[in-house]
Length: 109
Image (tube, rainbow, N blue to C red):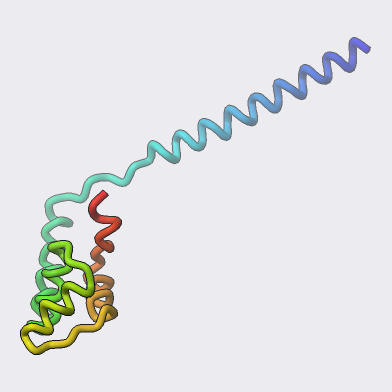
């Protein structure tokens, strides 16, 4: 009986150590935060974004700017339709994806 108690205690200790290792690994993974981009990386990103925006047509650039201001797809379509241009929701989504801009619901948190 004493032998079983010693074995049980040893197993409990092993499980505790294993749990502690898992918790330590999780904390380490959570603490590993991506470093802030350097000034050179930011400048590269800004230049790439400017180049991508300049490559857009005037209509698409307007749609992107309206979306960035927080208008929903219908409001953008209405605003551009007043200028005689119809706009599909997928057009806005396409350029937002190309420019790697998060959807408004994710950006405003």
